Image (cartoon, rainbow, N blue to C red; front, side, top):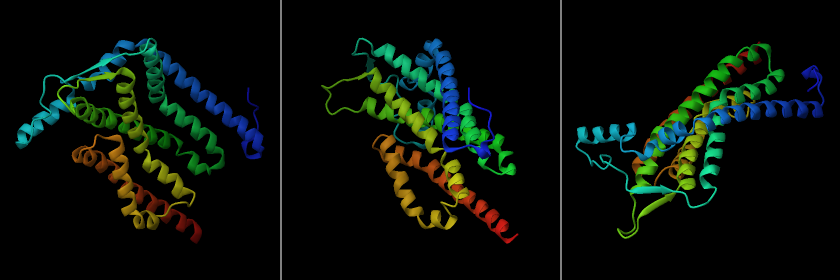
Length: 273
């Protein structure tokens, strides 16, 4: 067990020991949530993971109705995606089941992981800042889950639909390995979850004086280029998908500028006192 010491008087090694226990607690929570996810195999795979493969997936229905309403190309109106998912290795399905459960465990346990992170850095903050811990955990978790939902309902189906129907020749059929398919879904979900934490990251950078509103405004054009590059990496190579992904990230960037303005004004008021 970790020693009950005053964290303000802890040595560097004591801080490392304290960090170790916070990491252990976070991993235990992920492990417990992962075991629960492992037990619900049918729901995790048939409903969630393989959901974007079905023509009845909500995203496809919405885009189909929207394209009909606007008189656009009805490429999202289909009865079945023309590809199959298969397992090519002996232990592939068990391995996929195991690591998907770990990923689901991380997503489910994210609020507790954030809580452990906050518990480690909180002793170095002012009492007023410590009181905001509840809001930090709630907002961080909300933004992460919002990103996960965006990745699942927007990025994953757009990528699966584009790559699943793309053919260089009618003689070549798409038969994807289960690891490749799940890797695409997992990357889309986690990448968006992390991207939606941008305002939280900017908040702490601004808090430590590493970022200012002027800096973010001055480098907005570079940020836009970077966002477009990231959008191009995590989405299929078509302009519409990249545009859909880049819009919320650009909005988050503008929100980050507002956050830095608020923090900057507060710091100026403190200095004048």
